[in-house]
Length: 469
Ligand code: SAH
Ligand code: SF4
Ligand code: F3S
Image (tube, rainbow, N blue to C red; front, side, top):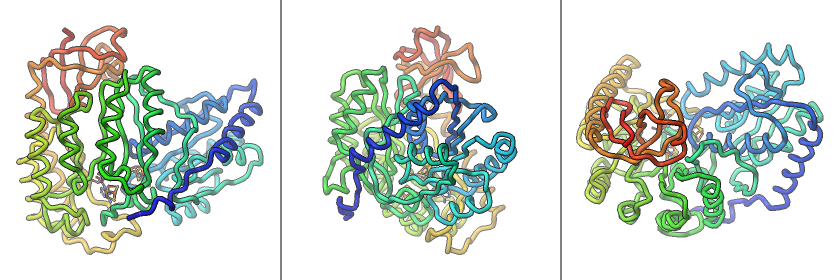
């Protein structure tokens, strides 16, 4: 067990110092319109971290923009999960070089999981000299003072220290309308053999229940109707404090908050998900009958090599219980294709499991070796061509299943939380049903931010269409 003592709660005094720095930056900018751009790569946790950076920037007096030519501060919040996540950032950093040459006062910052890897942070520091500010996931709460050093003292700033912190009380820019992300814990203890997350996010540490509930109460008072509770493995919530079943208990408390009508969470780890959690989901109206349960592979040999600590049989048992308790449950998962020890027969085991479970949708990834992880040392038994073929096969099989799963919504009347106009079809409103599936339908703007009953008239593989009742 990981002892609570290693979790460092940033003291209120340290937070106060950051708030003072926010105010002093605001004073120094006063009267001048300054723009800041934050670009986010990676998962919801990173989206939530970027909302914190944006919250701080807004309080400093910056106006947020998507136009890099307009920006006085540009921050890339990066991801390290696969090599292509790195490649995207290198490409974008290179492209900023001429912008910095034209406008030397521009502050370019890079933060997040990619630069929490020391070798990468050092490489960026030496090769991309137009970058002013490099800070890791653990130094996020210090953003005001780090930015101040870059702005005031034109200093190059580098901080990837401070593993294991929890910082409360800094501003957040909640911009998702009626839906919001709430991080309930940080880090991961699982060390799946392919994964970089435990190295860049540190060990598991849970926010206090009181802090989480007061954040959600605040959100509810400000129009949020749906919360997504975030953690790399929410089923471990509270374990760092020696608590058991703390996640199910937390969910029950969130259910009591008036104004919050829908509760979702991700991710769950199959080795830790408890029958109690599934029973709680089934019993509580507000907890959506929707579960993201990353599988990774249907082969017991590969699961063992991945250090996932469950078997195909155990996974199927959980799914069977979930379906029994919630016949309408929508299931999604993550699959890795081409793990070093995966053979054709192992891949067939994954396909057979997909056919058996019939997930509503899957997120599939080609395995990408990550420096420093155990799997990166394993020799690869398949060629890239074989892996590409498997990946394509996986998509074909799943697309048929997803379409079939979407068809079951046709004819239903479903409640949609409307988020806005569809980007691809501005004639339509868009929102999500209980299953977290996108539903588009015609209606006027007054419905945005509300729950609206919609009759589902047509299903496609990725989307549902309906008519407002
Ligand atoms: N904590 C979450 C997952 C976070 S990462 C969980 O365990 O469920 C999201 C997904 O990225 C993982 O589920 C996995 O499918 C994929 N992934 C992680 N590392 C990867 C790698 N090295 N190559 C390819 N995909 C990877
Ligand atoms: Fe990575 Fe595994 Fe942790 Fe998920 S549970 S973040 S896949 S190490
Ligand atoms: Fe998320 Fe990528 Fe970091 S998936 S936790 S942003 S490595």
